Amino acid sequence: MAIVRGTFSDEARKTTGEALQQVLADLINLGLLAKQAHWNVTGPNFRSLHLQLDEIADLARGFSDQVAERAAAIGFNPDGRAATVAGASTLPDIEHGDIEDGAVVEIISDALLILIRTLRGTVSETAQTDLVSQGLLIEITAAIEKQYWLFQAQH
Picture 1 (tube, helix red, strand yellow):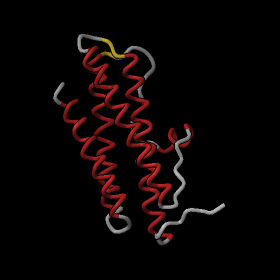
Picture 2 (picture 1 turned 90 degrees about the vertical axis):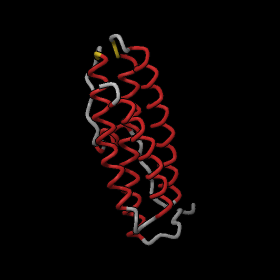
Picture 3 (picture 1 turned 180 degrees about the vertical axis):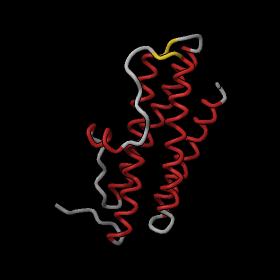
C-alpha cells in the first residue's frame, strides 16, 4: 500500500500536520460541547440558543472534516478518536445536566475564544510550511470569529 507523502519536507509536514491535528481536536470537541449545551440549555433564550448551538455543531463538524482531509492530503494521519480528542483539546469542559442560558453563552463564548487563539497561532505556524493549509485555517478563523461575535452580542 502506498503512503501519501505529498511534496512536503518531513519538517514542514510535521509542523503543518501538528497544527491541523490541534485544530481538529478542538473542532471535534467544539461540536460535542455545542451539542451537549444544545440538549441541556434552559431559560428564556432556550429556542434561539438551541438553534444557534446546532449551527456551531454543524460548522465544527464540516470544518473538522476539511481539516482532517487536508492533513491526510499532506501525508499526516489525522486522529479524531475520542481519547485523542479528550487528551488534546484545549477547550473547557461542560458539566452534565441542565445549563442556564446565560451560562451557555459564557461557556460557548469562552470555548470559541480559546479556539480563535489556537487558530491564530496555527495560521502563524503554517505561514512558512503550507499556504494551502494556512488558507483553510484562515477561513475557519473567520467563521469561528463570526460565531464568537454572535455569542458575545448576547451578554
